[in-house]
Length: 125
Length: 139
Image 1 (cartoon, rainbow over the protein chains, first blue to last red):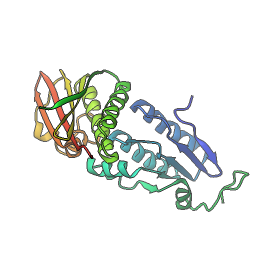
Image 2: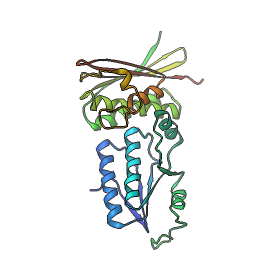
Image 3: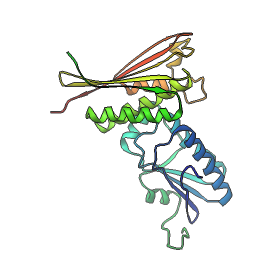
Image 4: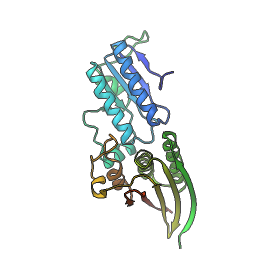
């Protein structure tokens, strides 16, 4: 079973983290996502963390490593929906997450990936 | 005299317990009516320290106490383990210093998140980290 459901829309993988991740699950998610990106050759990954009440240094690093890994696999990762309180806490914690692309929501994330809209057939344009 | 609002103790023996500590601390924060940012800092600090207790201390326990005095509410988290202890506290509190392959932000970062931070460790005897979060009662 997958750690988290990965939804493919056109050339993009979309995943929304809706549950509280313990560390091992976060690492499994990182592995599965890398495999899926390589298998399916997607151009972009969007990780929606709007449901997460906290991101600690462990999960912050996992998100950073996911972005770095997918980048090596020729796909760009955008983390979207971070809550303002989470952003404030991460900065105070000292986690700058350099190189991590972020956007305020899924739509803005898709725009960052150069995708204007998704039509119903699932083709990204 | 400070009035005790709630007190709980929880063992930390597995990664699942880290999630459990977050939930317990979140409940204390919500009951004490912390602001959203205060609560996020509290739960994040608890997560960092619980992971330290597990990875560096080989497990231990946390005691969570909420008190109120003169319209000031305080949540105290006390993480205790009987692991190997810390040789050089100064170094352990330095950002980027790590022995577990992490980012080395756990202790130093948590100190910045908390209102008060105290660490007591003796090599061979274990480590106790105590953090306090204060909030004014808004009425």
